[in-house]
Length: 442
Image (cartoon, rainbow, N blue to C red):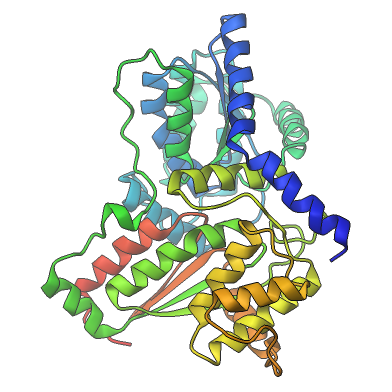
């Protein structure tokens, strides 16, 4: 990696992720909101063909009832077809957050388009009424209630097809300037993006900062998974039953993805608690995602990752994202450590070095530091095995499972459960607990 880039990345990331930067940014927005004497705007980006949008909409009423917010609803254009894995992920998320989701099949595209046109026609409704209509439309679309949807169309005449296309085009152009435009279900508050259900606790904390004079009746939101808050199964007899099966857990991660780093310690803690056979499988995602080659990490990704790290009290911020050469060194060092039974230590050292230590893995002194941190006495192994075969196998498995993002968790417990997203450990904890009734063994 060129020396200027090695110096620039940590400096840039420290500025973006600094708590001081975050406080100044938020203080400026709060002052502007008070000066204009207008209710802050909470912008929802959602799609009727997205199951996580359905779940996010169900979670909004407590926020809007407690905080003085003005809701703005924008729709994202249709994208890739909904897969069985998307529905499976949504079902487990609904279980974790105690929401309603009974869909077994994707919604019909024609129903989604009609729901969009009905919602566009309701632009003049009060925010609370429009949110109620939005929830009804999602229920009709995802529970295949075509008759009820037609009734809503009679009560709220939809806009024309041409007007709907023009409105979607306008929203799409506005969405294209957002670094989070690849994500359908998200909320934007005072310039900060909060992705899906995973970031709702962080949004609630942000709203508390903006409204310090409100009574302490914070909406009840399911917080993210944390070993410190305890696991679902702690009874010794039940734990022995789960551990006796020695289920296998595959953790797919990418060295260029911050959430792989933020989830690693919790994945290890959960697998140790339940006696799971943990396999760490590094992959490299195609260009265009969070892992695509770039001079500097996206500011929005760094901001959200730093926010998550602060909640979990994890070191984060001095970032040096590896270039293709650095990625090859990461995979080679991990393969070397796996041959010596120190795969976990090496994975932790590499990810922490990249996302919190500013280490450039193309630099020999930095590699030596990672090796020492992983428990090796050598500073440069004489023979490092090739990781190409392992990478190819992991990529094939990722494609076969239909997983399109990392971190991804695949539990093999009689049947195969695949979950992917920035925070799926709570859903995985519930899935492992459910295996108490599973008599199958690996």
